Image 1 (tube, each protein chain N blue to C red):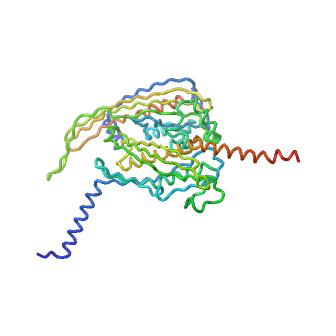
Image 2: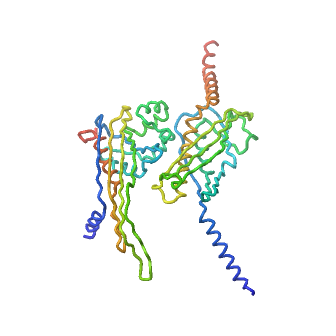
Image 3: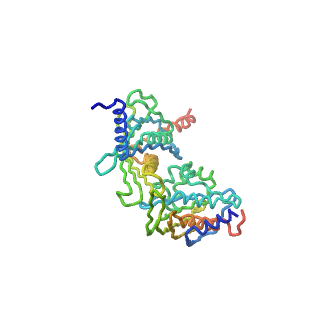
Length: 220
Length: 223
């Protein structure tokens, strides 16, 4: 009883988010048993950085060994392949993978991981607008906050799916999410947070799963 | 009027504590303790001595300009770890040197000595971008066993951390420095064989090795 009340309260207390997912597919998913997927964030832009927690979130949502989706954690992969996937050295195009594979130790390590797909996610979540104010005071009679605050957040991510074995671009996905959070304060501030980045992550992970697995949905 | 001895002592103590608090309130200390992964790739066929001077191992950048707060950034330990790890993986054999140029082991073919030339950083309020940025510049020197200069080159490294990721300025700056150090390692590893003098040295060494390998095989049929 208390549990369901808590869940309903949480749902009511969160702000609204809209997520739009677009997909451009060049080839069907061919993920087979034993294959791995690497999800990496692009970090070469000068004014933003793809958040590591977004990459972790997509990886955790996508990782489902029961359905044949085995995701290698970003840090583990980037450390294992150091220094070839650093912002300065990471391949920007699928063609560049050929040059990287000319290094025997790199090729061996990629093969040992069983990498089939490399998914590059580029983008960020930003606060686009904010308004209102909240004032808090403390006195002999007690403490309290009064006011109202609101802010908008926007997520804009694009995922490029590279087929590592065939050395081709399999397709692209984009996730645009928008949401407004509210914080009314009547004695106690009540945050109604729109989980914009989290919803973009879940939407992208769900779409990626459809994208990477074979159309019939069974393991090959 | 006479103050009791203990009273003055307590007052002095409180004053000193207040002064210390006021001084430390405007100063920031960052200690970077990075561990770095071993590079993956082929090793250059050289026996290399690595000399990291005490200045390099204990490097602390101090910023105390008028328009900035005081910053003490200790990168010595992290950059020592980085150069030992990266250089240690780059060559078939590496020998850490505690002295240079004295007591050089016999089989050393090249000695590498890094020096930090510059460290710069910007804070979000200075650039109006929500990113902490760090630039580090290293002067790299390579010497032959006799102490003659073989090559000198520069490594520039860049690291950034968005403010949203971290809890404090110190933590953000430490992370940006770690990113910059990883970048320095990547540049060192991928750029070493592109330095013309070192490229020639490696080509000579490869040629000597292939002649040594093919020498006895070619000599056998003629005997």
